[in-house]
Image (cartoon, rainbow, N blue to C red; front, side, top):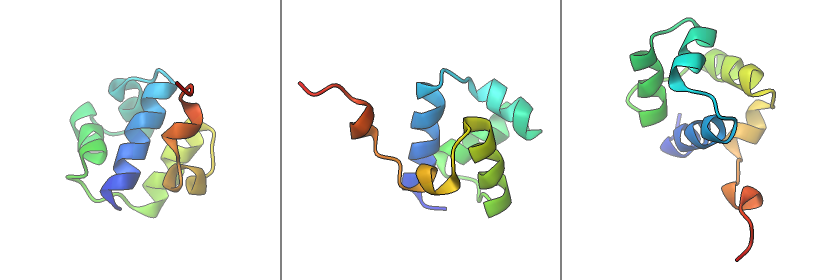
Length: 75
């Protein structure tokens, strides 16, 4: 999984006001394990990415192609 996807996971989690602890609990892993996903220091299976997408209530493709600029107010 590319670091771009890891960054997207972190941004989406923060936009939803979910904590790393909440995500870890929902995924059945430790907070430290979840942190490794966001940092890109842990390989994430497609199945785990699908679980994350379910928690976010969005499609995996939307995580992969996420564009933060769509959520920012123009200056």
